[in-house]
Each structure stands twice: as C-alpha cells, then as structure tokens.
Amino acid sequence: MVQYDFLDASFGALADPTRRGILECLGRAPATVSELAERFEMTLTGVKKHIQLLEAAGMVVTEKRGRVRYCTLGANVFDREMAWMQGYRRMVEARMDRLGEFLERTEQDT
Image (cartoon, rainbow, N blue to C red; front, side, top):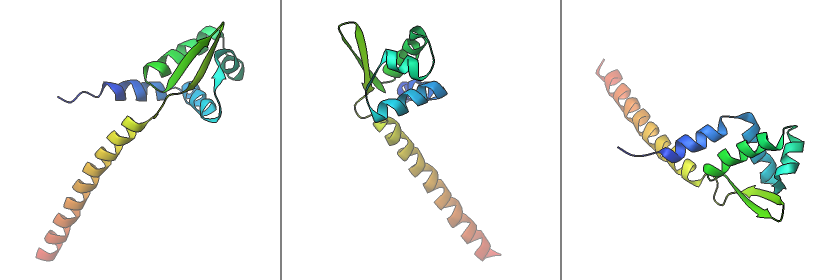
C-alpha cells in the first residue's frame, strides 16, 4: 500500500483558516511568532501550536535568533502535494476519456 502520510499532514495543516492565513502572511514576508500572534489576535502559545503543525507538514521553517523565533515558508512548499494532485488529475481525466469513448461507441450502436 502506498503511504501518503505527507498528505495527511499537509491537508490537516491546511484545514484550519488561521494556518492558511499564516501561510498567506509568510508568503508575503517572513515574520516573528510575536508578529503573527499580534496579526491574528492570538496568544503566543496559540500561534506556536499552529506554527508547529505547519512546521511538521514542511510548510514553515522556524529559526531562533536570540530570544526571537522567525518564521518563513518552507522550501518547495506544496511541490509534493501538487505532484500528487497532478497524478490524481491525470488518472481521473483518463477515466473520463474512457467513459467518453464508451458513450460514443454505445451511441453509435443505437
């Protein structure tokens, strides 16, 4: 059986609107945990939990400099997910093509 644990982590991380918002913010510019907490009107602990999930999914990278933790988007964010979705899309399109061919054949027989 093929393992898609990375998809579980990715889609789980994306399931929350706050985490999607954090990714959007970090897409514009790196930010500190404190800046994100202020932006989303959350406690530092709350934001840290969101960041940990995003980090576990490989979407965010954090770096501690002194007493400040900086957050940036991970390298190649969504490359694996996009590759999986494109493969899945090709499979579905191939099935639709076969269905279309079948319907054309059955229509011609009637």
